[in-house]
Image (cartoon, helix red, strand yellow):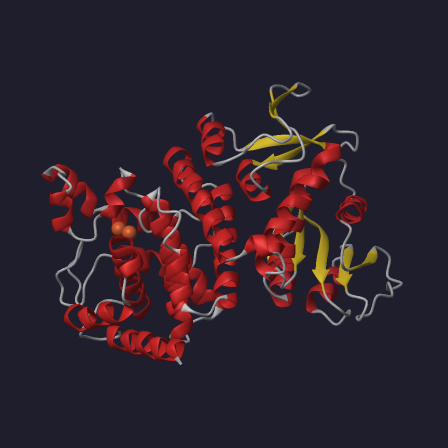
Length: 439
Ligand SMILES: [Fe+2]
Ligand SMILES: [Fe+2]
């Protein structure tokens, strides 16, 4: 059975989805608008509850739920209409929510019969990475219906190495004692919302990049073993949200470069996260920063080198670099296929945005047609791909030059490499930003 969940607050959406799916036998159908929630209600017959974040009852989704006699849980702030309607099966919960009360209400409204006295709650392995590096609760693995064994002691470190250990054993979920479940949720919510509101100094740009780099390493390991899983997608989505919030809070490119000089131990992870932030930042400078565009570019950044057989191959910025690195001809041939293979991998994602595969497939093309794999020239390279190619090059230069990286120098070389098409618009945006940052 499913519930439809609509809220514009992405953090709340993630937290409530995880809370519901971890404690009840319900699957969440997220909706990105009131109208979409209505369409889901119309098209699916197994919806048992509508949860909607809405200050009043004027909603096409609520009207549809009433028509279909589906219970409604409306979330509203004290400034909204918090009086419950007389309609049977309609409830109002006042924000901020107490998760335990919310879960109980969903359980009652949906007539969910998951046994209340289960001693453990399932937690997705990937989300543990977002619940901090050490936990204030024990974590268990399930051996049989009723047998659980403790695998992480309260206070023990949990990092991408441990994540890879469990993922490598085919475990996508672990368990926490029921009494600790809210603590787990609180840890994760604190990590997420703290990083996004910036109220907490520990979730600075540095922390966001550090955390995202660790998570990305784990996602790469997981994708190598299991391919694209909902867990990997969920973590990438959270990483993208975090990057979007961090970029909003930190408008200067220079600051971004400074922070990105850290966390370079695992090149592929660093490079993908650096690209996620820099490409996102340039899209803002270009005013191509709608939520959808930002999401596409960021997802492409996280995925673009995922199909590389060896992660260290991502250090190459040209085919000549591969020869210097000592790759054989067969390996080089294999390398040249990685943009298309990664593009194919991205298509396996549920609800993937269409343009992502093109951005990934074109990330090694060049405007003069000397790139690979298809030798596309500037007339065939899409605007978003052009932005991505420049950001990718910039990340390589930043890694290569470190503290002596100079944006003016980068722009001087820019004209020789990218004289055509949309590339010149990107150059103008970068130049403009340098001027603004020096004022
Ligand atoms: Fe690549
Ligand atoms: Fe790359």
